[in-house]
Length: 202
Ligand SMILES: [Zn+2]
Ligand SMILES: [Zn+2]
Image (tube, rainbow, N blue to C red):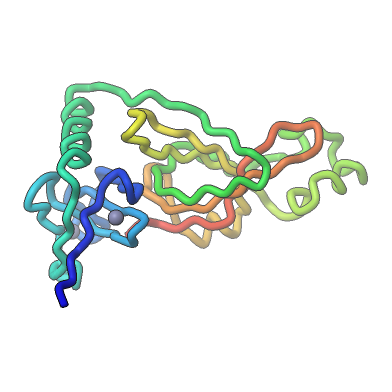
């Protein structure tokens, strides 16, 4: 029986982010896709050298990346080096829409008054009922930029997040994170993203 490693590319939602190795600080590229691949590369392009400063098992894995995808990633990097800025597009949810992505934390608002945010009278029984879970506990707001190579944009997700969830993740501004957010809706207000889960990519 011959087992063939899959080739990763557009079809498996491949994502490549320049970042820093959290162990040695080297500039690396984080690659992940829906097949479950999660790997740091030292540089882009064949033979895709895996960053192995902690000598982990990833070293043994040979990852095959589709050529046209790889070319686009490298070409994008070159444009960024020359000072090009990726356009940013705000992403608003539909109700109950779920998104799971990786991206970079670009803004943190440590204190959010949800009553004010949704233009409701503070602590009124009506507002508390309308806000449900949002009326309880401490909420923050973070903005995460997700790279969309196919459309050549950064998708900007602004999320409400419980302080306890944020603090457990231990992320800071500029960190690469994996997050799950769900679209929620308060009658008469614009739908918003609520962060269900977030963790550092490592
Ligand atoms: Zn894949
Ligand atoms: Zn390293």
